[in-house]
Image (cartoon, rainbow over all chains, first blue to last red; front, side):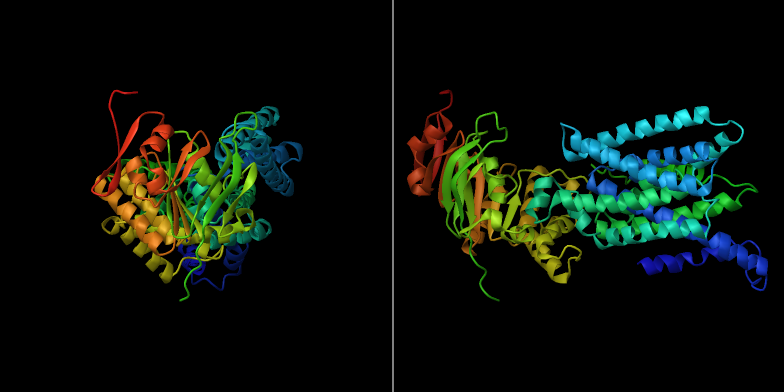
Length: 313
Length: 264
């Protein structure tokens, strides 16, 4: 399946290569392709696959079709880290990316710690509430940073980052993201049937000889790690992690052994296509997050209006 | 294929409470179910029946006392081993995604698979037979979210059958079923017992309990009486269990409980 994905996506460089593809003798074109487009396309692929796969994992684990992978403080944590890098370190690439990743994990750690301390509700409710609280803290931090940022130099950069973009991606970013994303996705892929069990009630999961808490924690950690890694490079790219898992379930059914690969495939395709549009449609760069939100919202509208839409609950 | 081992289930002076400050839900509870027997736990609402099943499952741990499966303490079983030994049919289950009935039954194969393994053709065959045995063949492709309450209860039974347990725990297995399905499930229980499966089910309905071979009467966390149907399913014992006058009579060789309206 994974091989099929990469084969399928192999045609993208040439499909969006607007000048004739036979110009292989052109040194400039080869460099452009190898040093700029390929890492960017690979990162877009990792971004889409990670967000969509993590979205499927989250929605299944929480038995809630409204959650998305960034909600446990991950997205807002990364946003805060990136803004901090832009304001305090003048936007140096390593600082922005490093701080984004650091704060993404900090956000998750805070949410989980808070959930453990909470004294009421089930595990899922506590985790969701803590995620909301941590996200709110970080987004207020982002607000403060925006307020103190230099409106001419830093504010545009912050805004651009928050809208999500892959324009700054080179091999270096792709190389830092891949060692986290690939093993995490591999683990999720291997556990794709077992994921089904974990959507059931805790007592039932237990009666099936599984350990609900531990197995959920493993899958959650893998999903969040992949999400945090890609978000730290690409910024906030919304809707892929929320809508694509729904579309995949509608296409191939709820069984996650089919829905998870389908979701990952569709997420990867969506991100690569959106990024292609983002960099080719206009002379300037369109932030990727705008496109995914636009397409995601449109897909959502079509989905809820179509006659055979079945509620997930 | 060798004959699978038979497991009895025994509670040995088990006490349990959800809240350490409040009174215990179960105190000094002892009862035993022989291998291949059908035991009904009969009692009023809130008597501790479900708690008893969750203790047998290992989900709850007793404050003191022991639970023995096949003569071995429950605490010594590993997670997957326990999953292959015991299955639970809960009262109801919240379904969040529209799995087909067959996909759902297939989940019962989990304890027989390695953590990263996928179910194979053999597992699918077992799941399909479990769905047939639960009487849902015509609904095998139907989404579990589109089932009626009674059909869902049968789907839960199918999932537990696919698990091929040696001990089957059922929580109010007939509560949502119409007469025909009630008879089907009670016949199914007797069929399983004939195969050597030990069945323990809770019920608040005397008519369902009368289908068992053994009865445990529960009241306020204690086993009021435990024994074979003929000895325990009596006018005095049922009246004591429910706290109202209940009359047990023999109709066509079967024990039937009746009551007088307007006497409470």
